[in-house]
Amino acid sequence: MEETIKSLIEKFEKIKNKGWIKSAQKGNGGIGRTLEEELGIENNQFELPDYFDIELKVKKKDGIHKNITLFSISPITNDTESTISKIQRKYGYRDPNNPEYKRLQKWFEYKTIKPTDDYHFFKLDMNEKYIYINVLNKDFKIIDTILGWEISEIEKKLERKLQNLALIEAERLWKNNQVYYKYTNMKIYKLKNIETFFELFKKRKIRIAFKIGVYKTGEKKGKACDHGTSFEIHKNNIEKLYNKVYSVE
Image 1 (cartoon, rainbow, N blue to C red):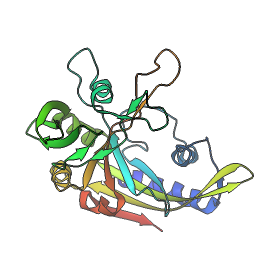
Image 2 (cartoon, rainbow, N blue to C red):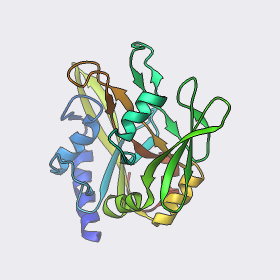
Image 3 (cartoon, rainbow, N blue to C red):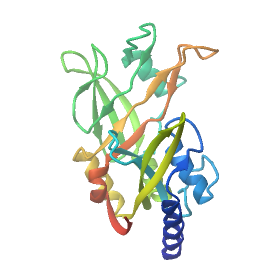
């Protein structure tokens, strides 16, 4: 681990000293992909940390989006229809611009009742095996329960991918219709323990965000498009979950 940290710090210092770097791709993913290319990391979808045993999280410095996506994991599906599709069909809200389509792009916290549309509310709860969703009607009576996520699967995610984490910040510049990034600082953390994750979830420091859109063209038109159901933490709370071990300012 010490050698990996040393290697990452040395490479990051060189990237930092380069100043503005042209984005490796268009869109929101450019900030992370550009750093990965500078570090020599190939683009892959494996359930493993990005840089040997360190997961990388890159945020725009002073950006409005302060929450860090720890990991994405879809809810359990026990029948022929996926849970994401069911949520979109039964509990999603009408797209303001295309009311024939439903979507659900909202976040939820433990035991907090929050509307999904004009008629339904979600309330997250948890037992020894699952984080689940109680669906309430307008009278706040439970009308459905959705098994969301197995505790054991979340634990595996934390064990495999998030034992060590590097939080990196970058500035962004638009120049001649091209995006550039300048990577300014990095903090490296070690997970306190898995129990702390669930304690913070119960304290509403970790939330679950649904990003369910809809296909508007093609063969899948009208069907749910899952952009990743994620467990998120505000960056100001990261040291409640992790211990800081190194910092590059």
